[in-house]
Amino acid sequence: MNGLLTDDQRSALEEFRAFADAEIAPHADPAHRAQRTEPAVVKALADTGWMGLAIPAEYGGLGRDAVQLGLLAGELGRACSSIRSLLTVHTMVAHAIGRWGSREQRERWLPRLATGELTAALAVSEPGAGSDMAAVATALTREGEGWRLDGHKKWITYGETADLLLVVGRSAEGPTAVLVERGTPGLRTALITDLIGIRASMTADVWFDGCAVPGENLLGRPGLGVSHVAGAALDLGRYTVAWGSVGILDACLAASVDYAGRREAFGAPIKEHQLVRRMVSTMYADRQAARLLCLEAGRLRDARDPGALAAASTAKYFASTAAVRAASDTVQIHGANGCGPDYPAQRLLGDAKVMEVIEGSTQLHQTGLAEYAFQESARARRPHADAVTADAVRRDR
Amino acid sequence: MATDAKARIAHYLSGFFPVTDLKDDDDLFALGFVSSMFAMQLVTFVEHEFDVVVENEDLELDNFRSIGALEAFVGRKLAATAAS
Ligand SMILES: Cc1cc2nc3c(=O)[nH]c(=O)nc-3n(C[C@H](O)[C@H](O)[C@H](O)COP(=O)(O)OP(=O)(O)OC[C@H]3O[C@@H](n4cnc5c(N)ncnc54)[C@H](O)[C@@H]3O)c2cc1C
Image 1 (cartoon, rainbow over the protein chains, first blue to last red):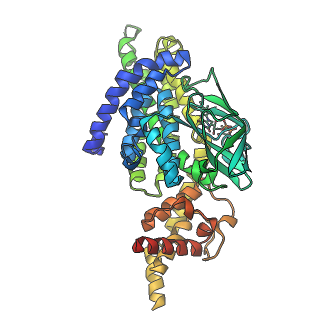
Image 2: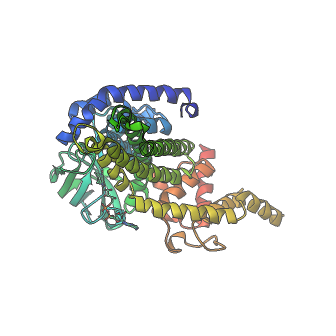
């Protein structure tokens, strides 16, 4: 992959890798068991400035490109999917504010999100609305100059600790996004424990009981909370989850290769058994393919190419499903040790499975990818715009 | 130039709508199902194709409703960029 990166991207990757190995990986298994992220780990990440890696420099971020953001998500994902999910939800909210926020909103929130002084979470899902985001029922009613918020959000990653929540509720105009600060009277959160994966992700139930939201906290136009605000956030979330899944593939490959070289059965290291090698081969090829899809998605994103959305969806679909295959084989290669608490294999399997559910489930991506395929084909069948234009110009003469 | 912008918009939209000839004033949002990412795809297309920035204030549905509306919107954005 290194040949496909610029010098800046390559040296950033080295920094991300060293940090993930030193500061994040040692905490992954204890955090998984304790079902909590220690604040010190969040602080270590914030101290690097990388919570604001992709936030524009004029708002206090590092203004780095999408490829570098992906590389960071990949390295954090290799070390600990919970911490990677913190980066994901935090950058989704920052991106939505940067994309659709007013200048005042950007100036107010982005510098503090960039330093990690504030952490953010995205609250769309509800007990009755997941894939179908437009079905959210949390009520946003106008009250004076502002809004009143009533409802229940569920499965909110880092919802237990976030200082700022981007909430999509329903107003008279339809799905509508607002920013809600921790400490708002009527806001209550409770940690959800015993998840299958990203167990340290401080995922929470969030209740709003008559919360007063000031008018200036409306993000984007009323009615466009799903199509534009969550849409922009989700596109970036898919991208970093895809990279996080590449990180899981990296971790699976490293664990499997190491274990298969050390464990002996029938008088030989198990890596000598062809059926074990087959699992490693598939994992290796999947990792290479997933990484290339992610790089392509990053490159298109940096070029602001409209094809970036389809590329992010393709990368997320492929990388997350490949991560589940790889993690399942990693457990298999580890035998009973893969099922037990002394090796990371079972953590990787649970984390990988969550990647298939969040940021658009596998089935939603499958449906969407077919749609992209039909779009491409329909455009290819029509004369290209240049030809249309040439015809029109001839006609106009 | 105007015809050029219209042709480029029409070509892009032809991917989304299975009608042979999309008319200038056909209401895109009334034509039926478009994918959940359509709105963001359209915004990204307009920004990339015409090198403009779509702001929150621009998100009037009327700017995005039809080929004709999109062409007029792009024309206004380009004129504003040229003037500034
Ligand atoms: C650990 C974790 C963290 C999360 N973090 C967040 C967060 O930070 N913020 C947030 O807002 N949400 C979060 N979520 C929620 C997540 O976004 C939803 O779980 C996801 O959108 C799927 O929704 P659902 O669970 O309601 O499943 P459903 O939408 O009920 O889907 C159930 C099944 O039906 C399938 N299905 C649904 N519709 C279709 C269709 N049209 N065609 C084919 N199959 C279909 C799905 O693929 C799935 O297999 C999190 C979830 C988990 C598990």
